[in-house]
Length: 335
Image 1 (cartoon, rainbow, N blue to C red):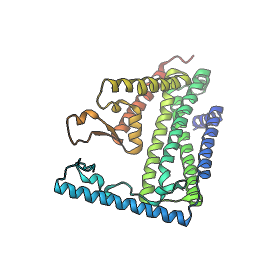
Image 2: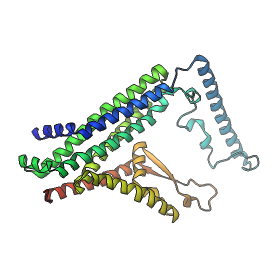
Image 3: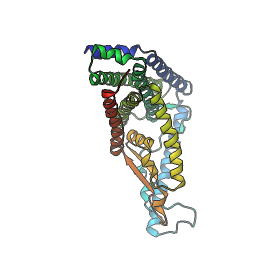
Image 4: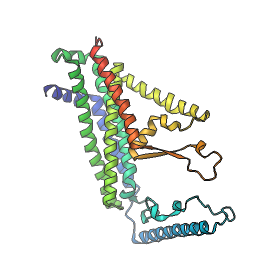
């Protein structure tokens, strides 16, 4: 317990961590202020007009669905009058849409919490992932580079215990900070929606879906913190983690992706870490594979990455690097 308390004091006392917390709060404040300045409470006239437009849009969707069914039944040619006739009319079925047009869709300049909460949460998660990675890398990297770990081992001469305490303290602190930041962040925008915009549809399904995204985001933040910590431990410096991240983005996510597209490599998105991150956060990610529809009139050329397989990839990557970091730290000369 004394070791964890000492590590917590060292972590929270680091100037870089304090600076990152300030930048985190500043980014949130700027986002909230920008949203508040660009929104207003809609008048009764604006609401009536928006409701009418939403109703008209829903009606046109129903008309298109019924026309598709009629043409399918009569086998009307698809190209005579420019009407798009899919292989399955369920594509036009309003009942199968994830969300039908609502009044908020036709109110430009009005913030709707129900519509914007998920995109705002994705922005928050992205910032927290960056925060966790940088803090994790700098926390262990600075101690290894300055000799702080050696001094700590003179007091507690058990390498794996010390490194485990550092990692556990890091993950616990990042988790608590992420939860507090998330609550404050979403609460601020909820207040904006109530006072200077629209609350939107806040059903049980909305909150459960938002909670699921938030939970997956917290897992991703912890994985990013552990990843930064592990790479910096292997490289004995904060810059090792930063260099590895930059090299991966430039060489693989940009360079290799371009090469794979040039050579027509099938389903290359499966090889990209960003694809698995997106699939984990959203629950499923769909990508286009042009070769699946070669010579076929009607074809679903999409393939999917599910959250389960993507989580497995992320866990294997992070777990493997963390295990390697502990194995190297156990035997390596620290002087």
